[in-house]
Image (cartoon, rainbow, N blue to C red; front, side, top):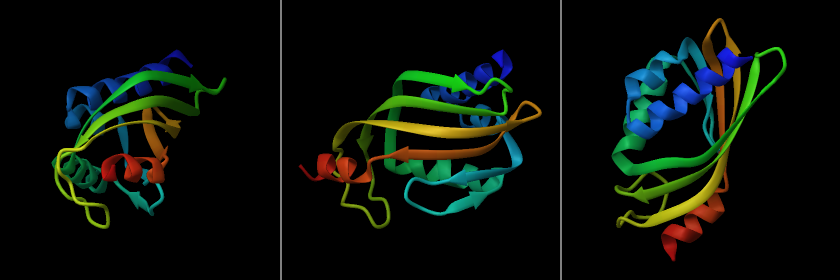
Length: 134
């Protein structure tokens, strides 16, 4: 169980540093990524492309991260607060003008052999839209 928590802590520390390679190193080659209110994408390369798109449109830091791990270390969950800025238009979303936002979010993970095999992200998209359109 401590190894599972350390892996999730490493994943989020890498996110907050903008160290995409270290984030990717936490993932299995066939990682399943459930995008908030979107589809499932599969594979580390696909996840890397997602990170590149996110980096282009958003500058985010996650604060108040709490990680919970199942007793067998095979599943984990995290809750956090996103502090972000919307930098460039993202397809299907309102225009970006540098708006700032703060909203709670969370993720669920499956873990196997020291890697993340699934990450499912959740946040309130309506809350985010209301903040960037205010």
